[in-house]
Length: 250
Image (cartoon, rainbow, N blue to C red; front, side, top):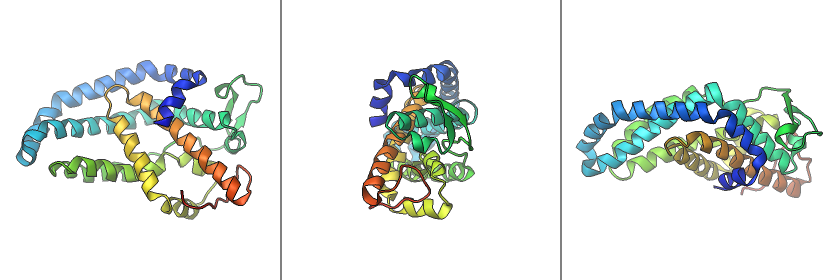
């Protein structure tokens, strides 16, 4: 939620939203309309076998989840991933972590705000990588929605467990961590990343506004990085950018 407040409290981020607003609204509306039109009632009818009257509610969550997955996939593949990187990097610059951002792109100090200080990438600029595993797991976990009452929350938590770490893929790349270093870091924070991923997924279920929440989630992820980096400096006295990272679990 901090990302939502931060995004709206810092007008220099607004152009990043405006540049994608119209295509994202059209795409989101098209996807959700078609998924509800063609799949909602059949899925409610099937869920009614297991859930009774709750099928109308759980069916809505299920369809919204499917729509969010399709929309996010299309956004990140064709419209948004570069914009998410720009939001993430701009927040880090604004919070004093320009040195970290400089590990992955050229910065223009003469820029009047963090967005205008962003230069060309010097390494692969990916916010969250395309993951076949995540898509397959999403499909595998869908049947959890058949379980009355607890099924939908379980589905959201399981998908959030996978989605959380991907929200900071950019951070790990800026630090130039190996897979082993990344996994060691994540293993100490499984619950926090699961919670972050679950909340991010819930926000993606909000019709039409999913594009906005993709951007605010990127801002929130960057704010978390700011806390992690400050803690690292306090704990081991390290610089604000580099491959080594060691701190107490938070």
